Length: 224
Image (tube, rainbow, N blue to C red; front, side, top):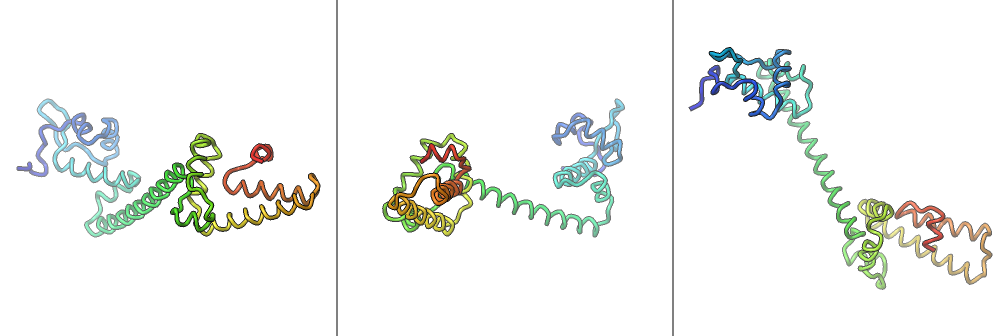
């Protein structure tokens, strides 16, 4: 059987109440000082005691504080009439719903990033063959992770891969094929290294690598 609203609950002193609610004694003292929640009773020994009504008010404060409301707004809500309090609660419920949606979106993005860190490419096996061609080896991304998984470049590659659609992979594949064709033609025509055309092809190659990770000129030389 619950005690009446103003009956002390087994002499809930400030210390016991703080432990019960998971807050500090200093916090309860502060709320007492600003008139937010004050202990309503005193024990025979003179200690200030919270009643069940005080405890209910404290629980409301904790709920409002979880919504990041300032203390002056919480105080206003505690003293508001039923209609005003109901409107405010509905508003806060909508805010919580929006926050949950944002957190779910963040969770989904993190799941994609985790998967990309592990597998390198977030495409089905069928989509990989369709985009990269029948000679594509689906073990290559796993082998790349085993070799470079601890590098900054792999982290960048995974982050970009986690946001990349099949259409974007298709565009990158097309650019790669076009560049390879241009390089073959340049080699076949004995294009002089260091000339404007050769330098432009080299820069196009670096730009293509930079689709996956930040590629400096010295890094490009090592890769080439």
